[in-house]
Length: 411
Image (tube, rainbow, N blue to C red; front, side, top):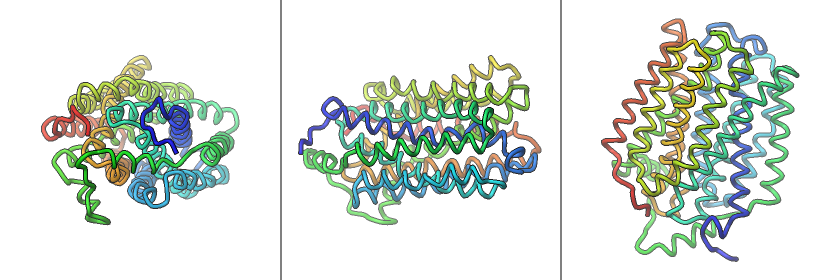
């Protein structure tokens, strides 16, 4: 078996795993515009039940975070490909559950399977690409990975809104989601290769590197705050999900309440996703050359400014610009955080350390959604949540600026 590393040497498999993360993004993206806006009309959720509405994002975050934590360690034992295929098998019930849903409880059950799919399949698509490539390509790999995934989110969010307008929410999500799952599962089974041998070959070629001897909860603690930089990275990963949560949860509702129709809201939210995704093709490689800290900190601050600008406006043009700024901020911070994690661990423990980081990062969905729901309930509206997210992003970016060691030279 040829275990040569590098994107060029493994072009076919690299593209294959980019396609996988696109499909994972598409499956969750189909819910982003449709479910929040139609939660009352199609699923019987009472108007103003902000905490109940937030529950599906809370469940998604908890499930995905937990599976992120397990996926890396499981893939070291059973292989990346098996975990990837398992992720798509768990996705199969999602469209059917949304089709037969007549209450919000069915949506929550579908969200459990959606979170499992995200935690397993997205993790494996990223880890597999990192296994195949060089250390100096980590920023590029993370940028390409997130570009593919969040373009999937954006495209699916817009297309699903159109399909829902034509067929109804549940029927539209069923047919769209079923098509995504069938295609992705077929590619995972027949085209993807297992990349664990590349990770072992990379470890053997790294002079002096030794993985942590810890396991279980000890490894979790090591990867959470084993050093000052990991702690800074993990808190930033958690907090940055507040931005994505409010765009998923409250932005479509705010735009529709202020006069936008469903398709327009889907298009505007799509601007954020497309710029976030496409921008990472620039910011990911840039972090390999310029270092991680500045891109992460300024990305956090731009996101906070964009979220506050959304709630201050009643104009579609300003909304579009604010969502574009937020997308730029996410493009700056998102792949750079993942690359910074990889800078602080050994190749053979990378899947596990990234799993812990992704646990804290996606647990941010749960923390953010629960907090936003409580803030909206206490204030009687969703506007205060935008100010909360803006402040959180400002403070988290400051922690990164002060607490993250320079990573100009990846390991």
